[in-house]
Image 1: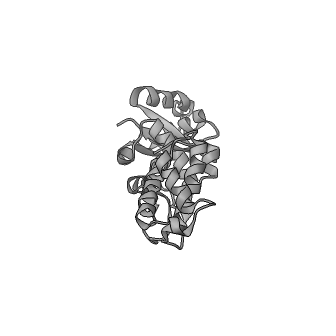
Image 2 (image 1 turned 180 degrees about the vertical axis):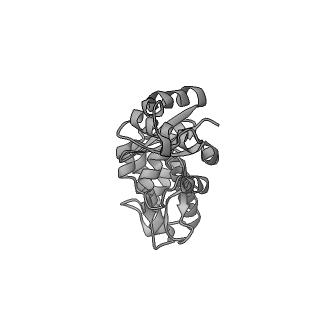
Image 3 (image 1 turned 60 degrees about the vertical axis):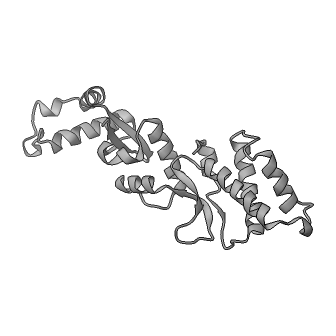
Length: 220
């Protein structure tokens, strides 16, 4: 699986082909997407030379009917399938949709689908998922560890504000604040400092998801 820029993910070809299982139709579609991704990733040899020779012969602009070979076409399609699978964004795989065997594209992996459900996300934004998954994995958070690492959400226009918001929430949840009797010195607590203690001492961290919302994780 491969990392992409935010701009690339915004224009990523999530759906490659639908409504056909004909090899002669799939080959040019798979080829076109693979070539585009090779340019994005600056990998001119992502499709190997022998596969390119077969593609040109089978479905190139100057291909001839008499050049078609079912066995070679099937092998070439399999080679392209492997290329696209390797080029899938982090957290995704390439293949047919579970609900439609004739719809090929890049789909969220089962483990990350379950992880994002734990975080309370829907299932209609692959671009947003891919970006978030890249950032989480870069921060050492894997799909199988989400349930233990995830601590909730916070709000704030900055990381400092969000951290202070979460520290105050946590103090309330563990019974350190009685809002019915809120008085000095509770009114004087610097919750930003409290958050820094959680960061340094207990491995808490924030993940920005936009709109002033943040995910809170803890080292496990």
